Length: 263
Ligand code: HXC
Image (tube, rainbow, N blue to C red; front, side, top):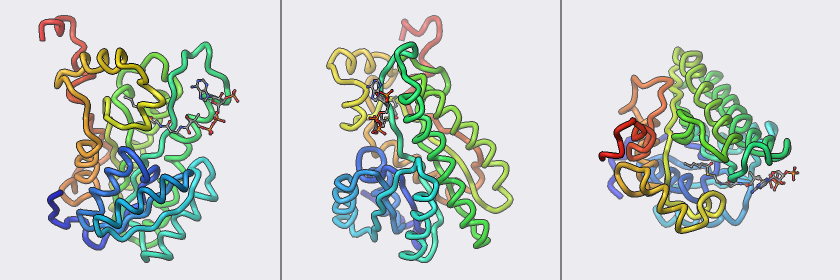
């Protein structure tokens, strides 16, 4: 992995940073120079993520956190500050998802996903935003969404609604906190090769083939391809980008025009 150390001396929190896209983001930010705090409910995920980051020579702290609990989120930021002295970057990556038709979805199922994705992203942004504002420091917050924020998607009403809510929050906070030097942005991936998501969302080869056919690039993203765009948004290279959501989906959601069958 190349590095120009553009994030040297920065401290980043990545929620859900022990596996999948979150770990790829943690590694990218770490190789670019940041100290990284990974947060997850799952201590096994944290241990595996910490080993990967240590192998890259990245300073790492793990904090067991359920982002649905605002007290745990506040404690996460306090631990990060105690360990590394500051927090500059937050990546809201933690998510919950499963395929379920709306008429079958229980209130608890709806709440589980909305609490992780929408409430959790707000609690984390609030805690890091307060820290940055109190310290009078610039910072960056990036949320990992999904390309179905633009379209909705059958079977994921909870996730699509929650992530669209985070996209709206990204615009609001982008404007509300810009004068503090805090840039708030998001990425919206399409299908990404990630074992955790595969278990929840696309367990059959037929589903994988059908999804691949919907992507104009005719392949799935590697987690690193999402991490590159997150790292860009976290860095000074994106110093004038505010409240934006960058779709990183190989053209998938655009490829829905009437004559796109000709492609
Ligand atoms: C229907 C389900 C269900 C399923 C859970 N529930 N799984 N309903 N179909 N497959 C219901 C349960 O029955 C329960 O409701 C409620 O949801 C809460 O379930 P718990 O298991 O008690 O919740 P919890 O242990 O908190 O787990 C949260 C979770 C779980 C969201 C349900 O899946 C999780 O922890 N996921 C984290 C990992 C993950 O999902 N990663 C994929 C992210 S990919 P009742 O009524 O029975 O009490 C992503 C982007 C995809 O987000 C982008 C694609 C393009």
